[in-house]
Amino acid sequence: MRRLARALLLLAAFTIPWEYSLDFGPPLGNIARLAIIAVFLAMITAILQAGTMRKPGPLQILVLLLFLWFCCGCFWTIDRAETLHHLRGYIQEFILVWLVWELVDSPENLLDLLRAYLAGAFVLAAVTVGSFLLSSSADQVRFFAENQDPNDVARFLDLAFPLAALLFGSESRWPGKLLAATYVPFGILAVLLTASRSGFLEALIALTGSAVLILHNHRRAFTLGFYALPAVLAAIWFAVPRQTLERLATIPGELTQRDLNQRWEIWAAGWQAFVHAPLLGSGAGSFVAAAGLAPIDTAHNTALALLVEGGIVAILIATAIVITTASCALALAGTLRLATGTALLTLLVGSIVATVHENRATWLLLGIVALAARLHAESPKALLHIFPTSLPGRATTVAGLVTQE
Image 1 (cartoon, helix red, strand yellow):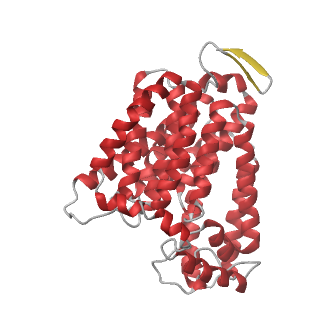
Image 2 (cartoon, rainbow, N blue to C red):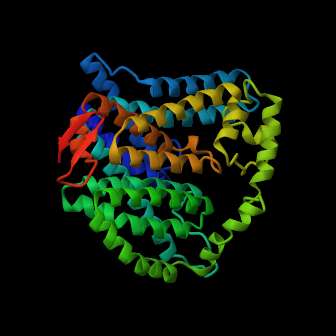
Image 3 (cartoon, helix red, strand yellow):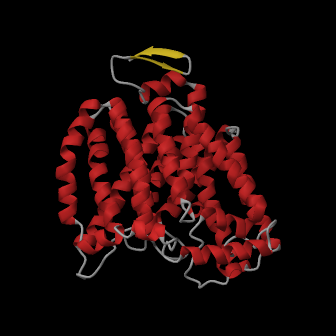
């Protein structure tokens, strides 16, 4: 049963990037929701059969505390319906941190999990490019998968860049290397087609870290990619609509004028809402009601959303989660540290203009980082074998461990 639960977890990781493109409507929901429910049921059965479960780590405890605090908010929320709705969503998102921790027990399983997310991101990129190819409007500027938010699409794609670079150096078979190598140009094209300005900036961070990863492990591949870069950029230049590129070109003006597509006004209203209930907050999902905004608006900032909805207590717990996850990434070695660190930095930048705590991809990534740190502590040699930290044939010293690759 545990093996079945692990297989279902891989399915869930595969569906998370493109989950909203396959929604069955109420009461079933989207494909990722169904997959996570199936994982949970299979895992509970496996735990009951074994009579034991893995001891939770610091991240799992902190995430549970954050969820329980939001549950307490039901007693003072200003919008009970939205709070209950968000709590149902949070439990499906936060639980990923526990599922990954409980079910993945070897570096090989971790590699499979990364492959699953990268394959899902490839599907998302394909659907995004497909929406561009099938577009019937000559004036359309932004292209993205159906039922998805373009900024979320860009961020999900960006998070996969460092994972692709990591897998390119870790895969021993050509199908895995081909997936990792082809994702990068394909993902770049998809990010540009979304015309997401925040996604473009996040992509710069993710691709910089990815380039360092490839240079570190595969100098020849980096050199070939460098020489192919002008041709790739030229192809993208002619493929992406001019209006889309013009929207991305407004990034410097948005930053200098401090407009950010009217986000400053939303943040000002959100800050006033926080001042009215600084300690306890106004309840999960209450940002729009507390700030007096239109129903279609969102906080466009993770920290501000947590402050308004959960008060100082929520932001303190969230800060502890960030510090704990960053510590886990720093505890790793070589390419795995660089890949997870790049992904976390990309996510952190995205949190400035988006509510990333409401996405499953966020909690899957946090769970993966905590898991990698646990595996590093349990079996550093096995982890180093799967994720080598230097060029073949060179002696490597990692955390006091000397190996000959």
